[in-house]
Amino acid sequence: METVDLLRNLMRAFDKNIGALEKTQLACCGATIGQCHAVMEIGLAGQISLIDLANVLNLDKSTMSRTVNALVENEWIERITDPENRRYVKLMLSQKGQVLHEQISSVLNAYFRNIMKDIPENKREQVAESLELLINALNKNNCC
Amino acid sequence: METVDLLRNLMRAFDKNIGALEKTQLACCGATIGQCHAVMEIGLAGQISLIDLANVLNLDKSTMSRTVNALVENEWIERITDPENRRYVKLMLSQKGQVLHEQISSVLNAYFRNIMKDIPENKREQVAESLELLINALNKNNCC
DNA sequence: CACAACTGTTGTATTTTGCAACTCAATAAC
DNA sequence: GTTATTGAGTTGCAAAATACAACAGTTGTG
Image 1: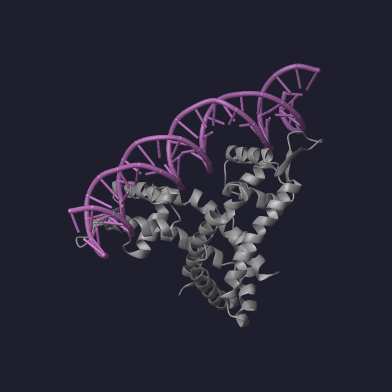
Image 2: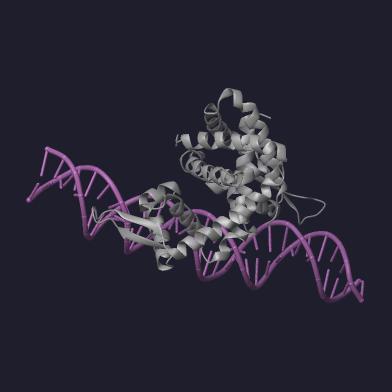
């Protein structure tokens, strides 16, 4: 099979798997899918502005603003106005948010560990190296 | 890095890339993102029932029913009632739908070819084999 | 100071979505 | 053979997600 087709198949498989995972496992923590996505990105970034967060998640800033509102109301994140530039508001996880972040991480890790079990032991190193190459290629690409 | 982390990173990179791709490139054909997804799955299956399609796309059958309505109204697909059992309705692409399917395929192929350019030539075979292993693992997994 | 540029919020309309109740056809139960 | 049950798909409805546009407040530039 052509590698391009493999990438399309992989994308499709991810779509389907993650879609199912999100609907069954992720919403269990009390947060919506969108809120979970935001929490994961904020946790990864450490701190991030609303607009940067919206860009990462491919959402309009107004949509993002409302999701962030909900996260603040649930005390999962905190808004910290930059004293040096009061336009900027840094978003970061609260302690409660860190717990949520870890819960979601656990679900994802368990899920992907399960996937890995189906990959032959002697191939895992090769797969890991390949994934790194692919991730780099995807991250480098910002065509659109 | 642990392979589980690589999978999480890969999922995230796909999410971001495909999200951006869908918003900028895919809607150009006059169909919504959801309609494009449906068209791609119907094309892949050849023919498929509404409920199977809903399951593949992780959507409620009512949501699917409405999307299918729109696709039929736009003459991208056809509903064909099974004469042997009038409960069953097969969905399949019309000629116009096949054109759309190919348009979307072209966009995806161009996009993924571009990704592949960033993977060193001498690693592509290894990457391809790894992707096949991963796709199989993902498809085998139906935990949720 | 005036004006542009930038971050974030709010008003509003549209779209997407899921649940529940329904119809219609086929099959099973009796 | 009549009735009950199952199964596919539709529709009513309400809730959630989303984007666009207009806005407020802040900073930098001339």
